[in-house]
Amino acid sequence: MDRDMALWIYLYIYALILLFWVVPLGTSTQQLSSRECENLGFTGLALCSDCSTLAEVSLCVLRRSKRLSYLIENGVSELVSDCLKCCTEDSDESTSKITYSGAILEVCMRKLVFYPEIVGFIEEEKDRFPSVKVQYVFNSPPKLIMLDDASQHKETIRIDNWKREHMLQFLREKVKST
Image 1 (spheres, helix red, strand yellow):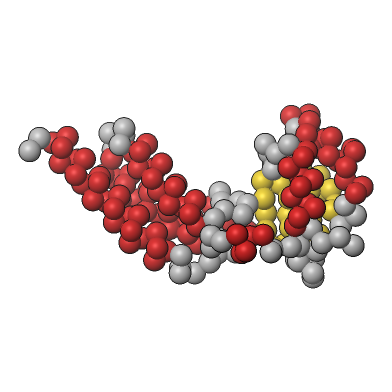
Image 2 (cartoon, rainbow, N blue to C red):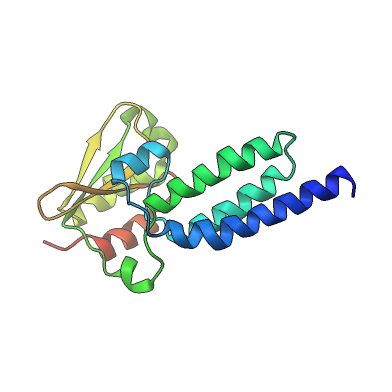
């Protein structure tokens, strides 16, 4: 058997182990706080099925890498593990019923010029949501910080590429009206 074929067999077996053993078991691992997840680069309302997709995509990318075995053993499994600690179980009910008492739209004032949809929302639509506050933080990417009834940070959602309509729909569905 040639070296390339052996490598593909190794990759295939590893992918099967990752997808059928690590991913289902990973959903029961200890969940991280939203702040810890944000620091790892996982923001928003990611579903656990997204972690499986992440594993598949990562393996496709790694197939082209020359440092394949090192990256597979150390990179993908840790990445998927972190993803599973930050995800929400897949079900329409689990994500559709979550509501928040308020939100903070955090953005860097200097970077607003790059986000015309967010500027439009702030200038023309924000007053329709009295429980949504705008906070300008230096060098912060645009994000919504969702708040619970005690005004505590519950979830952070990056909105870099959102259209104004998406922001309006999301806030109508997820923020309780006052």
